[in-house]
Length: 152
Ligand SMILES: [Zn+2]
Image (cartoon, rainbow, N blue to C red; front, side):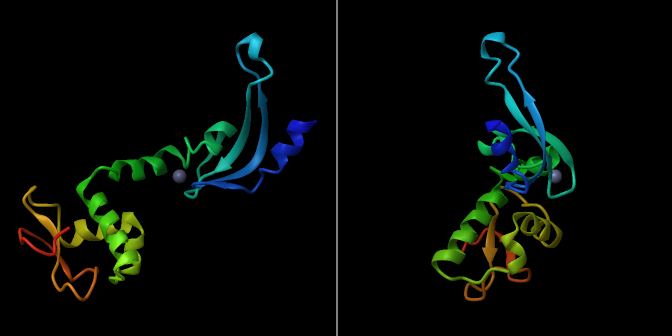
């Protein structure tokens, strides 16, 4: 069967944090008229070890790119001030070759370090400041401040 050949070619493929382990079968559409459409399901393992059956459509479309708690972690940061700062830092690193602590290429480690070392942003007046502009982004060279320059 055609569907079997294609489904097997997905084994081991990665979609975001998911890795496909096994083909779980085809579930026909609940609507009799569209029975032939349905969905292919795959057993997937998330980077954190969680295993779940995911419809192929959700994998290929990117609608599901990790287990609920892993994708929540990312979505929980989107739109926050630090997430914006992190995006700008990454851009700076790329275009202006400003050094960035290797750890901070991981957004989660960046947020963790900032919260641990600097604490939460005191108020909206405060910006993320690099103490010595030439040295780059790493713990020890950053602070919260209301300085008008060198801010993120
Ligand atoms: Zn996970």
